[in-house]
Image (tube, rainbow over all chains, first blue to last red; front, side, top):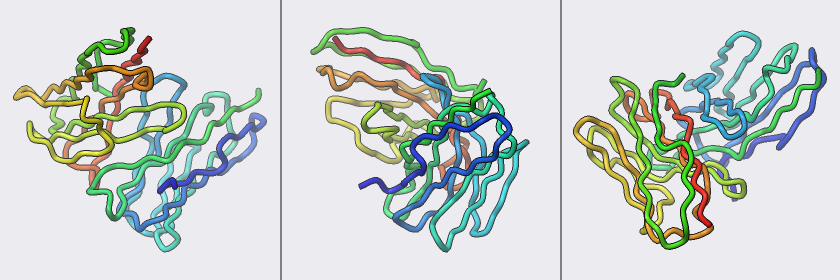
Length: 112
Length: 114
C-alpha cells in the first residue's frame, strides 16, 4: 500500500474557485514537502514543512502540517489557469532511511 | 530553472542495451538523488549519493548502478534494458539530506525502450 496517500487523485475547478489537496501518511513523518509538476517536466519546489502545526504561504498557495494526524493540506485561493499541474507531496518517514518518499500526485485542471 | 542539469533530455534505445544518464547538481549541493517516474508506480526513489559516497538505496534494480564523481556530477547506468524500464528519470540535488534541505529537481531524461 502507498505510504503517502493524496486526495483527490484529480480535480477540475473553475477559475477563481478555492481548492484543497490532502496528503496523509501511514507513518510518523519528519518533514513534508510540496512540489508542483507540469506534465513531462521537472518538479518545482513549493514549500517545506517541518514542525507540527506549521503553516506556510507562497502567493495564493498555503500549506499546513498537522503532525498529530500525520497529514498535510495544500490550499489554493482564487485558482488561476497557471495553477494547473500535478501536485506531489513528499515526506521523510520513519523507516524510510531518511529518503524522500512521494505520493502519487493530484492532477489539477483549472477551467478559464 | 532549478540549477540541476540532466542530459540527454530524450533517449530511445532497444531492449538489452545499456545507457548512461548524466546529472550536474546545483552549485554547492553535495547530495544527488535519482528517481524513476512511471504512470503506474509514480515517483520512486532509486539511490542517493553524498559527496561521492553512496548514502541510501531505494527500489533500484541490480541492472542499474550509479556513481558520483569528485566534481559532484552523477551518472545513472541502466543495463540489459527491458520494456518496463521506459520511464522518466529524474536527478535531484540538495545541500544536505532531505530532513532539512529541499530537493531541487532537474527536468528529467525520458527513456523509451523499444
